[in-house]
Image (cartoon, rainbow, N blue to C red; front, side, top):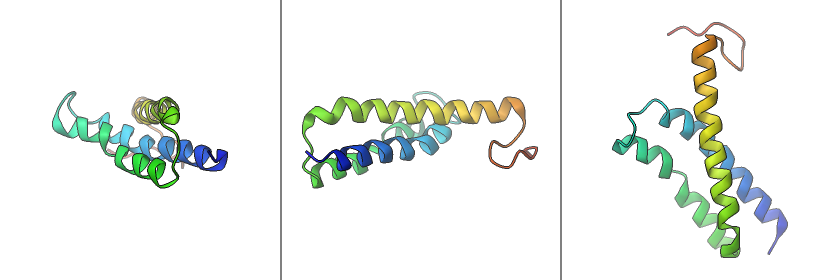
Amino acid sequence: MSWTHLILLLVVAFAVNVPLGQWRSRQRKLSPRWLLGIHAGIPLIVLMRLIWDLSPYVIPAEVAAIVGGQILGARWRQLRRTTGVSAVSREPIAE
């Protein structure tokens, strides 16, 4: 197992799920779009794991990175809504 591939896989899993978590947080809970927001990034992660021939033992770490990205994305969006300020530009958000 290559540690470089493992770390890259976990970073990609986390990074892909941050915007998906933001999008998912705007959907009605348990709707098809909400479920799509949760599962949309999984084929990419599985494909990367299969191409790099990583062990199935890395799946719990993948799940942790995916869940962490989803949670951070949803919380980031919630923070932006409550403060009314963009986290990137510090300009007021026009809604």
